[in-house]
Image (cartoon, rainbow, N blue to C red; front, side, top):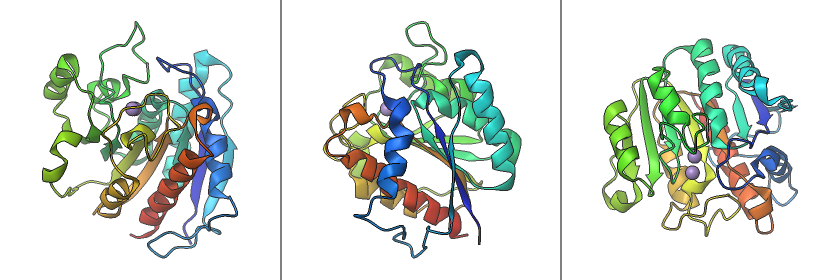
Length: 262
Ligand code: MN
Ligand code: MN
């Protein structure tokens, strides 16, 4: 049976507003194994023998953190389909660099309230507001689809046009197309794609977001192999009774189930 490596990426120094997401991976793994739930996916897979917990990366040296993340993704992505747990969203840039080296071409299916495609933010080109600008500049994916967007302003709209990014915006929710993919898919889930009613444990509360079920419906409809994923921006300091960690764990389970289904 295929095993799925799960790796913590505890880095939050590229966050623009609050720290705390560096402890996200630990809360998420704890929630995943909480006795209140089980390890079966809705699609019928028992993840008990499948999840391969590799612990968390040592990212204490900021100067080498991105290099460590990229090398880890390049190595693990060659032999398996990893799920990485952030950390803030800045980690997706080195993760995708590593996955590109490991597996070649893929589409990124990105869930987020925010486009995260600023050219730079507050002087930091590696901010958690910028990963998809770096990814698109380097041509690291064949297509980027961002789902749940509801904070876009002028600069990010220009970036969307420049890079040819596809947005499924919340204001258009009633008219979203069914997505179809002609390459493998890497999934990047910023938990703030969800409405704060469902996922309050994140740094940037942005009302008007997706329900947990809407996000799972999009995931379950992916019609191509999912070759890797990250789940980012869980901030335990902001969580309420661990509910956001449980939502993150649920999303992890269903991504893993999709990885097993092809
Ligand atoms: Mn994000
Ligand atoms: Mn976000």
